[in-house]
View 1 (cartoon, rainbow, N blue to C red):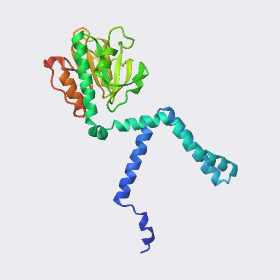
View 2: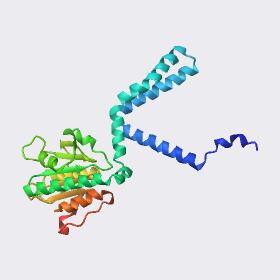
View 3: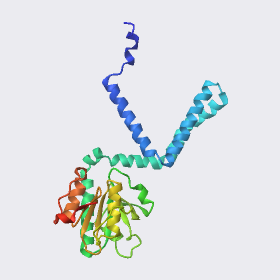
View 4: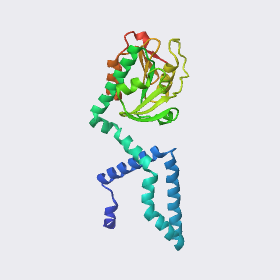
Length: 267
């Protein structure tokens, strides 16, 4: 009976579940902010909060009053300062697997557009490299090219890779249903590539697939073949249908075998 007064301090399973959800949310937000300008600002706000607590304990009335005004109106300032990050967080939430499951039509439309573009480029013998972002962000590679905010379409992709266009010499990066970058430079693989017919585009595609979980599609200018690089593995001479199937079921990470097993190499 002596612990009866503390019975409300014993959490139930719903309380534990709520705590876990809130902790996971803050963890994901912090992981997203690490290394960004917003994270430095957040550290500054935490420092101000600690100063305020110390000032209250020491009865520094002037400091507590001034910081009180800061906290009162600082919320509105924070919304303005963190606007880009808040927008990015909401966009990333929209790309989560749970949301994408409910919005499967969007992913299917992107897969159709990319497969159609790959087929057009292959028929024309136009070289191209397209990287589709998955869990690992490709934002760092956008900085090496030109940032774009445009909805994915087969016409847009084929136009970008038109020879002698300003952005044709580089990679196109896709996030969700948007093209986020063009003319981007990707890291070349350090693995030994024995096939001399594979040029810089293929080495860049393989390099990105080794560093990230992106699906990288390459159209060869010399052979007009479509190649997919995924997790450091080349899948050569794939069809537009295989491109579409892989993108629609990317979480399964399955790809039908190439026509010639020797064309698929794990490097």
